[in-house]
Image 1 (cartoon, protein in one colour):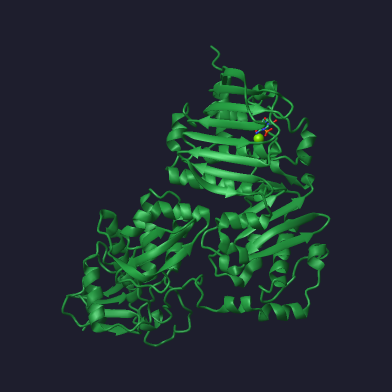
Image 2 (tube, rainbow, N blue to C red):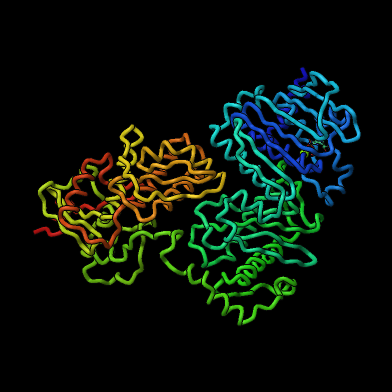
Length: 625
Ligand code: ADP
Ligand code: MG
């Protein structure tokens, strides 16, 4: 018996749709790109329930004829290429003719479209890849496509969708990417009846400021280099715009947003020492090159592309950024140590004079960047440089470098080597029952360690890690409803954010309040910090809020427990006392009492031990009197 059969077209379409449309945001991308390809100057995006109930794009582009309105939903139906060769000259965003076919396979679609020259437009209703209805209709010139109930017929996919906040974040990202590449087009985004973005047509710089917030107006450095081979345009953020997440990095090739870690690296490496490690600079860069030098057809959503010569592009991008930073007195020093073929490129060969270099390092921006007290500086935590000394009375390892909190830390070999192999780390590993004795002697060592004892052992805690754990558990307790009291601020601080960040913050206000941060909306995209956690006065609460926002972006879903955990960790790290701080006996006793009440009194939330324990049995074995 033969067992092979052909899948019905609607099933085949559903399967193929999985490649193009994974979530509401992918449909947003396709529909916005179609509107741009249709020459629209005004494009509206409307979503309800993060696109799960409704996703609609309305444009004033050239519209479609009656027959095209029906045919556009066919597999491989496109007006953009005719032959394979056309692929290598492509200047439109779409070309595969798969988007609308996919849309029609996984949602209930209503298309309304009219061309300038037609009296009447056409309305097409389609579901499960079947046309239900096609009628003439009244319509302005242009096209409106609405998709209802995405994945209504693919429940497995529908269930796979994330919480609205997360899907909305993806939608906003796609929207921003398209909006950035077409600043000459007016865009708007409405979500659940509220206008989130209203972007008037303008220059790229204006568009960036509209999207990122007005504070960016003075923080952008233009990048413009031109060679026969390729051109780069756009803006990079001054070093102070660097953030902990990669979110705000936009690289476009021939106006198409692409993901390319290699080229992102070219940009980041050009900043070199100017931004703290682990931070990412802001950039919106457009590379333009002969379409025959790139292959955009390697991925169904066209976000991954191949360059004929990636190395040249890398070197070009890097030197263009260095050049821009130097011209705007942001870079401290320059090196053009590129290979010879790159050196010949026009952009690279431009002279960088000694005067300019002097100008660069003397610039006030550079100076202010070097200032270690600025808000974006990342604290490196305490320094455990003396850790080894503590175990090594001979001092022989005192120069063996430092290990910081946050890095891995090794237990040093004890000074008195014994023959057994277990005399290293394991000896000092605290047992889960290690508990400081309430009345025991307590003293501080090296301004970093709290030394005390349990009934049998000597206990040595790291004060910073200890306090972090105490605070972490305290912030964690707020999940079960134990809110941290708010201390009202005398001078509420205003925090100005980009529309996307403002939306994100809005979603976590209740959680922040639980943790003691009281924020109130204050005009568009700004918040007033009315109060912060009592007992935890921090000199820069706004920075703490920004750090938390970065955490949320990193983790994604605001409903997920891990996001709250991340928040608690950030707050604990931020508010804990540091190594090097003198503690009174009272303060140390207080800390020890609080750690004794913790759920995890021996292990830091990062998995590091909070203390070392010199057990009584180890002492007696060692001395063997
Ligand atoms: P592609 O964009 O790759 O050609 P799509 O499935 O996205 O494939 O669209 C199919 C065709 O439908 C397009 O080539 C275009 O001719 C037409 N089309 C789609 N959206 C629009 C629109 N908003 N305005 C006018 N024509 C459109
Ligand atoms: Mg398309």
